[in-house]
Image (cartoon, rainbow, N blue to C red; front, side, top):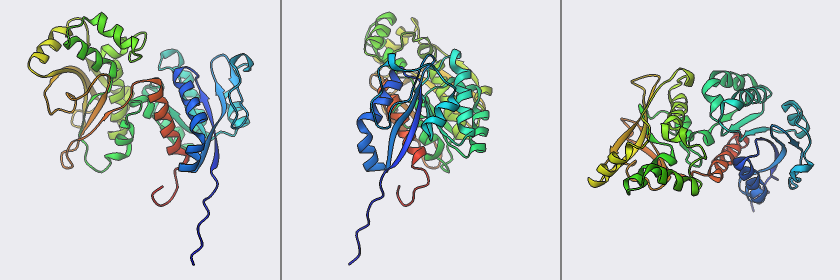
Length: 342
């Protein structure tokens, strides 16, 4: 009789979480509530070794709850957070703002050079420090994953990085910003821009300041990052041309709806036009994957001439969606090197 294999005990993996806003809190909650499930299904028990903010630092007990914020200590250097926690992963749930761009870059480079994997939902430092981050990862033999920065729960980065590898992808055509899609559909229903944006904010789809969403800047940023993964573009060198969603868009949205079509803010890039990303308002017809989007859904179409178009769509635009993307990436970097189907 063949003896039954005894499963290996789950591996404990400490995580340092940088940033404790809505996305950071959602990520921390996922580790707390799903720890046993993740350990059973994936063989790793993820726990918060440290939480860092601009004004405070916390070292929770392994597997224990976070203490209340007043009990947190003053901020410390990242090296101390990593050393005291023994963390193997730095998770960045920082805002994508110029004010924290340098901090995010410096933290990520330091961690990567020390052999600590980085999972990030912040976009700013990816645009400005892409090559430096890549070199740091090479030096430390570490990994960096960016799903939360390119489409929240939608696995757009996974496809760009490895899912279409070898399939000859030549173009990207995307609606990667849920706010823009939601607002355009509300305009097509007869609402004015202020009403549509207000409803998006009330539902938690749009930020308090939706300017990056409506200007096309956010969509362009995501496609710049996808193009970097696909074709090795340097994001900081990409030229961007955008057409905003504004008060003048209502007439075009209504006219498209009258023809049975839908107006979409479409971001695109092509390997045949290097280092250019365009975002424009495009009338889409039934049968187009971007036409089928509902509410704040997102979609990316990878144009592979020989393999055929490959589309990924859906995905929740919310702090929980971004946190789930970071959890997926954390599992990816901590289970790398397994065998078989693992």
